[in-house]
Every structure is written in C-alpha cells, then in structure tokens.
Length: 129
Image (tube, rainbow, N blue to C red):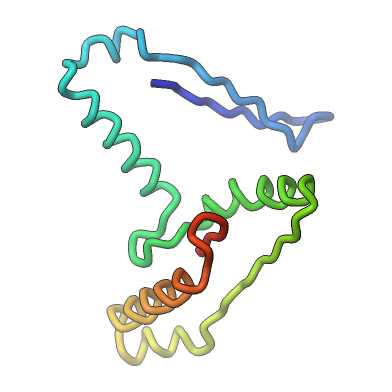
C-alpha cells in the first residue's frame, strides 16, 4: 500500500508539483489489520478514489478529474505529436426544465445526456464529464 502526497510549488517553480510516494505496507496501521481485511481495505480506497472524481448522478468524471487530468493529457499528447480536442456541451434552457418539471426530470435529462456522450467516445482513450 502506498501513500501519495502532492505539494504544489510556489515562486520561481510555480506550476510544478512535488509528489512523495511512501510505501506504508509495513507500517503499524497496516500491520494491525487482519489478513481478511486487505481486500476490504483495497476496495474501500478504490471506491473513495472513484467517488472523488465522478459525479454521483451521471457517473461521468467531475471538475476535479478535469483539473487533474486535462493539463497532463494535453502536454502528454503534444509531446507525442498527437492532436487533442475538448468538446464543451451546454443544454439550452436547462434551468427551465428544472423549474418547470422538477429536479428529478432535470436529473433524468443529465443522465440521458451522459449515456449518449459515453456511447460516442472510445472507452480506453476518451473521457466525458
């Protein structure tokens, strides 16, 4: 099990981040867990990580994911000579849907749009939020 801590730098090195990765597999906290809890602990951590970067209603990635991944992906793609595209979708009159038909109807529209978007992207290469 690894603990990762990221520290954004300031001043002359603003825009860079130092990441510290520490193996905590042999720590007292981890060693006190019974063996049968390893799978549960891993599942719990994975679940928290997924919930942190996804919207609970639509299942799409959220703004946290965008803020973390987009700069990396753009730089990475440019370094490889790949092109990148960002598509921003706006639902005209969405506020009217919520006020006229209620938030459950608005949620249904968002879920349907999320389903349509995820059906149009390459699973291993693209992401929608």
